[in-house]
Image (cartoon, rainbow, N blue to C red; front, side, top):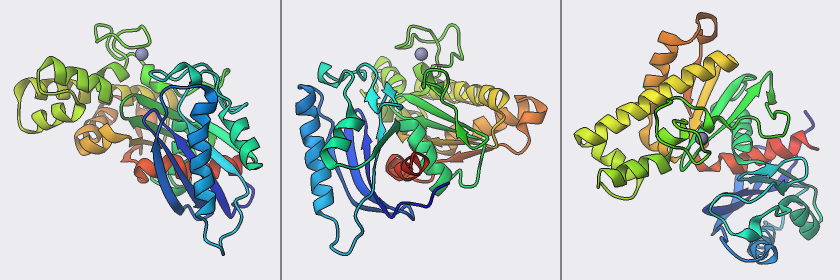
Length: 310
Ligand SMILES: [Zn+2]
């Protein structure tokens, strides 16, 4: 791997927030800031606040700090990582986002080489080099938040697939008679354990509008909420067994807001199920670990992302 760049501009573009920071070669973030993700408007109107944020970030740099040498971007999908351009339109965002050339636009604006990666892949790189998966060549990163994202690192390489979309683990069906999923199938893990799915269950049980309302009710012993969460945890555990059998990882690292809130309530059943049901050779010494970098893993992951492309 080439030497670590001294300083880069890191950008994490999510459906709700755009986060920016300067990242140094040791994985430290400086001048962290965030702005709401513009939902509507033309491409120029969407890019203007992004440019304003990265301009402000560069202006905030300490006079003694080195010049940033590159820009790394973790972006929500669908993204064509080869061109740094969105491949279509992210769900729930306006038409100005369609095919938005994020990478080329940032590169032109700042005159710096820019590398764009899918958010979950970049988060996995962050965990691999600076977080819970340090030193691991074979692991799976999962984010359980409003959706479920995944990334597979095998023999030190991110699995990208034939079209660059490899690792979309959230649409793995685990229950043929499960709830309908946004993708058209039934019983995808995302339709059962994601924040969106749990929020829907909270509404059905008239507990509130948010996944947190369901989690709180389950924690307080509400019988129906407990049943929903027991089912969700069992589905996640079965999903983890399938991942171990399919990819033979040495670890499954789990991040995202729902996973963070659930902690061991989500991870412990997965460990037990792997131990009980995964194929004997694959299940040896598989670690199920919480992500270590929290919401910063997308920003910190921009460092190895840029390194891999320099
Ligand atoms: Zn699905």
